[in-house]
Length: 258
Image 1 (tube, helix red, strand yellow):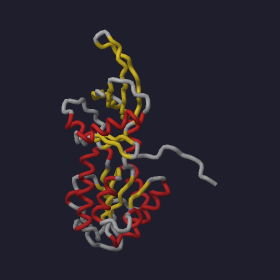
Image 2 (image 1 turned 90 degrees about the horizontal axis):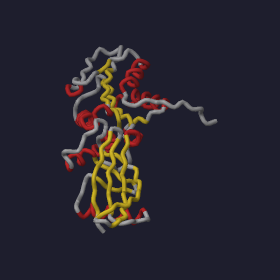
Image 3 (image 1 turned 180 degrees about the horizontal axis):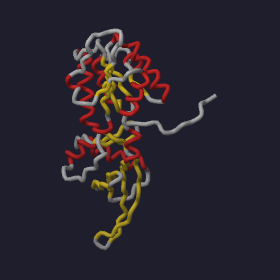
Image 4 (image 1 turned 90 degrees about the vertical axis):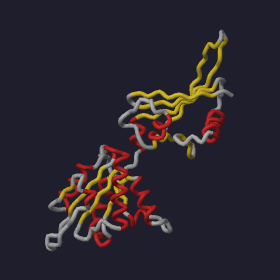
């Protein structure tokens, strides 16, 4: 069973096309040999997980260096699988072909992008950050707070890294208690790494939270100073700064379930 593969890049997305030089009617019979060929050749930029085909765009660009690059297309994205049939004339004979198209569109990619909001803070500031977490949840966002998101038995460092990867923003609540060390230092490093990878699809939001009754100096970590940071006067201004800086927004307004 002969198979070829090629890529078509478009402004609104891209299509990865596998072509079998025969007609295969059942979808499962089409996708199985593709998966086997990819695994046999140790192809690491595309794969299937629980029926969903994903494409690692950065690794794809490495594999096909001259492929036209699309600004918004990056990271690991899910694709929609479509199957078409064509009849071609080859050496005066008609040949039926099966085309398996893995389609990635901007709309589909944006739907699959991480949208959680990572809340970085010192443990002693947990009561303060918990209020923000609750408010963000009430507004319809999905905050990532360690005490709620971490699964028992998972190493803290691994959980923090995964939490950051599942997020579209990291909010750093910098108080007089915040110190750029240990796990907090890791959170800063992970956030910067995500910003480099996701670009405009990831925001680093630093809020300097001063206690008006405490004159202790509040210091923004050096690595965060390269990004814009704000010093809100109160909680309402802080939430306003967060919503303005997030790369996502809430659009649909619906009635509550009664």
